[in-house]
Image: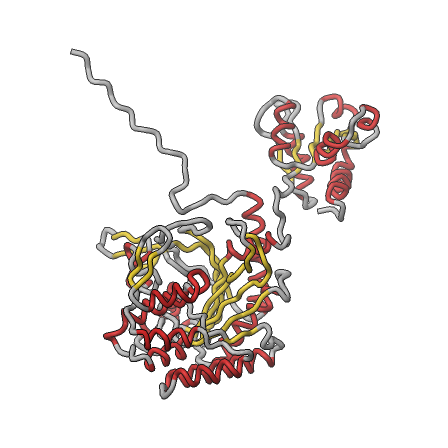
Length: 500
């Protein structure tokens, strides 16, 4: 009887999981350069860097995400062998609360920190919406003064200016206390209405996407989207919904007019009146820092979706226009948001610890800079490639590459194919501007051949005759002891500017 054949395990599919993506050379470099500019501003304002774990306990993270109907409350979670539930962080703020609570006796008060890194959300992916994305945060923990909120907004404005976006952004500011006051006036105070308040909060946060009619529907019985999916609403009476919509649309011609209207809406609510006063103070402080009403706008429609905000909230919105995926002209929109979260640390310590901060959506801001031509849209120039003409002598090309690197020039040795043609194809794929060649004849003569690959690519597209080709310096022989100087000059010519 024939033995059963052993069934081979299927090969895994080489594909990214749904809702995730890979980042390659030029994208990574552009992100790093942008983050360097941002963090330089943060450091100048006195903020220190912090790196914390990507994994936190579910208990430490808390249940603050807006999509509370998602599995695991919108996070990627699993149970450890000691039965502790762990999760990938969904933002950089909740971990900061844990860090401060754990190390507060060793940290200055207030503690000013910035952090950069990926975060993960177990949300439904869509066009431009991924389950892993980068954030860049700056927070002040330990100060209850609205001056801390104003400072965060001013620092954000300086950051956007440093990135070349001056006069192309506004910072919209609101206060959760005002919304809470309106909720009180609408009869939605107390624990019995917590669920309805959450739906109201998330509905307002979707104003830019759903419009006023869509938000109004979610304040009432609910809304059916284009796909036919129905989202249950807060179930408010028309009078209650009308009061909430009055809050959303309360923005006046000036900040003072907006605050006056908000004061009317909150009525007798002490919390609401406190929120209105804080907005007025922040506007005054920002004006003193040179950020006037045209840049810092009191906007009641800004509420932020996360559930831990307790006071001022703010968003940075880019005002230039782009063409979206459907061919429609629209403003670029929000690239950063944040606010005050005075109760987040208290969850760990039982003591009130005020805090405020901002989070920049790194990928979104990078897309904005790319749209404005502030970062390269194509592949960045690769390293100089030193070809290997004699596999028995690897030391010579390795020494040449080392000399170039010591002079600050990116360089590598072609370690793949032995064939010169394939090595040059590799150099093309690496977007290399220059290839260095030294065979036995060149070595005896004490020279090296430099092949200007960037010029060669242009000549191949533009020159039609052999005479025109030979008249161009696409390939030259230079003394071996002038390798660095000649490569530097060739790179400068290719870049049209100074040497690297």
